Length: 75
View 1 (cartoon, rainbow, N blue to C red):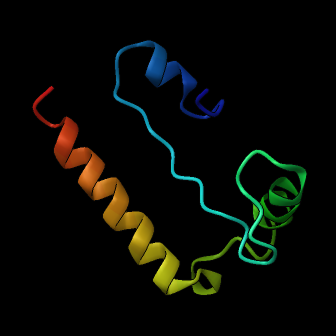
View 2 (cartoon, rainbow, N blue to C red):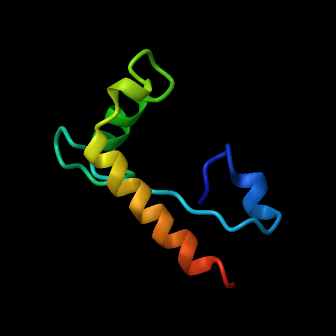
């Protein structure tokens, strides 16, 4: 299920994807309460700034989304 911020794009034929990682504080998987507690602590908060981002995690996320984009480019 896409997030509300991209749902309209997905419904209108734009290829959509999301990338959810495990909670780095307690290794909780996405969709569980411990994961959501971590996610919403930072989402649109003062700590949601580019200089706070874990550079290693950002590189892995960017690589995963780049690979996905490459794979669906010819669909």
